[in-house]
Image (cartoon, rainbow, N blue to C red; front, side, top):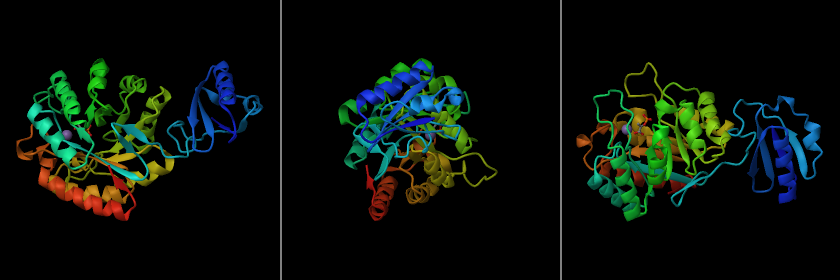
Length: 338
Ligand code: PEP
Ligand code: MN
C-alpha cells in the first residue's frame, strides 16, 4: 500500500499520516520525491480500511501495490533510486565503474590498484577479504587483515571500498572498512544476513543468486529496504544454465525488466558473468548499451598470478582500453562515467 501526499503537503501532515500508520500496527516508509512525498506501508495491509488514511489532511490518494515486492517496486517509488557512496552516485545519468582484484592478496596489490584506479578517475575499488569459495581447500581470503588493508587504501587514496560481507558476525568490521557492503550470489537469500544489512548505514550491492528469478532477487532486495536501508544496488553476475562456453550465462536481458519493475540501480559483473577475460570487454560494453548503471569488474596487474579468478581478470592495459571504449560509448548515450 502506498499513501501519496499532495504536492503541497507539509512535514506535520506527513508526520500525522506516519503516526496513523503506526497506530494500525504497520510500518511506514516515507519516500520523499521531487514533487511530493509518498509513504509506503508494509506489514499486513489487507486489513486497512483505506478511507481512514484517505481522510487525513494532505493525503492525495491511496494505491494498492500489486507486486509481492513493495518498497523495491516502481509502483511504490516511480523515480530511479540513486545510491550514494564515497563521492559516487550510482543511478541515472552516470555509469559507475567499480574495479579491483577478486581477492585482497596483500597491501602492495591493493595500494597499487587503488593508485591506478584513482589515476584513471575510477572512484570505487572492489576486492574480497572474506571469499566464498567452492572448495574449502581454496584460498579463503585474508579476512580481518584484508579489511585493514582495504581501510588503509581508502585512507591513503580516498578511493571508495566495495567488499563482500559473508557472515553477520563480521558485519561491524566490514562496515568500518567498506563504503558499500557486497552480498554475494551465494548469500542472496541468506535472510538473516539481509536483515543485518537492512539496519546498516552502508549501501548494499546485492548480487543476483546463481539461479534466482527476477522476482526472487527483488524480494531479497525487499528484505533490505523493509528493514530501513533504502540504498540498494542490484548486480547481475550471470546465472547457471546448460551453457558451457562460459562460466555463467550473463543475463543482460534481465536489465530492462528489472528497470521496469524496480527503481533500484542495476550493475553488471561481466567478470563472473563470463569467467573468461577475452569475453569481458564485449559484455561490459553490452551492459552499458542495455541500460545498466555501472560495472563491477575484476582487474589485477598480473592476472595469471592472481590468487583467485585470474582467468576472468583483466590486466591494467586491458582495463585502460576498455575504459576508453566505455567513455566513447557513454558520451554517445549521454551518460557520465564515474
Ligand atoms: C566476487 O565478486 O568476487 C564474487 C565472489 O562474486 P559472486 O558472489 O558473484 O560469485
Ligand atoms: Mn571473483
